Length: 145
Image 1 (tube, rainbow, N blue to C red):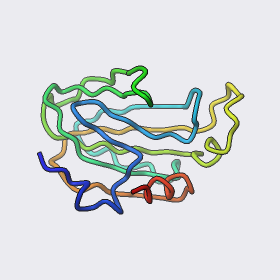
Image 2: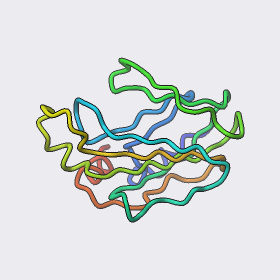
Image 3: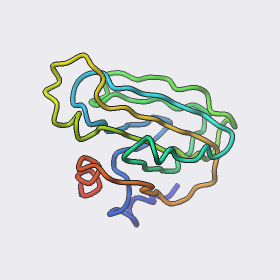
């Protein structure tokens, strides 16, 4: 499998990565609980451009038909619903809202500040895409080298 991030580094959405069926998602909040929803579909569910400030997507391949989210630092993981078409290529679309507000938070509240939606569906491999980018936090991560 080729690494498509090597040819499109500037536009590759660094906020999401998947390797060996393990996904890592960057959130605005450093420590604490975020609002998080996952949808697994058999076709593209379309991005929710009205509800979310930032939307990025990537392709990933799974040999198992499963994907897990890994916590920052590898301290824990969360199993996501089984993927609808089993092993193969999928598209992962990551939506975010209030990342800036959460980044600026002191993490001392139990209230949910930032929210995220993850959409996954079967699709042939294609280049990473930034669908919508309005937050300073996503802009920062897009410029990380």
